[in-house]
Length: 87
View 1: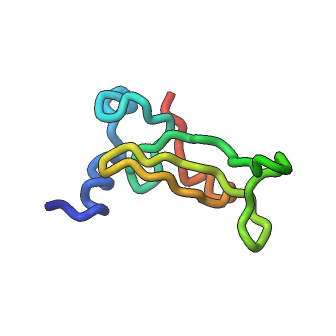
View 2 (view 1 turned 60 degrees about the horizontal axis):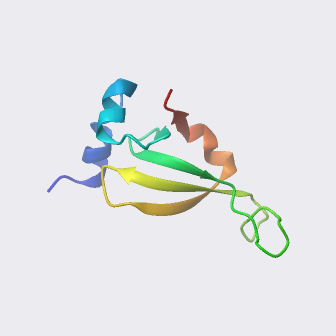
């Protein structure tokens, strides 16, 4: 079984059309290689305010779609530059 770093690392540098074949729904690639869907900024259903952590940093929801199991991650929006939009 490949380690997570190896599996993700093999995706770095692949042309976008190749990445789309592997994960057709992916919208972004993380700098380490994983493919994600940007789910946007979650909002509090009662107040409509953007979700943030204890330090007040706004979070973005990312759905990891490849190469491992699907999972949702909430990451600070300050890390958005670690993701490249697949065009």
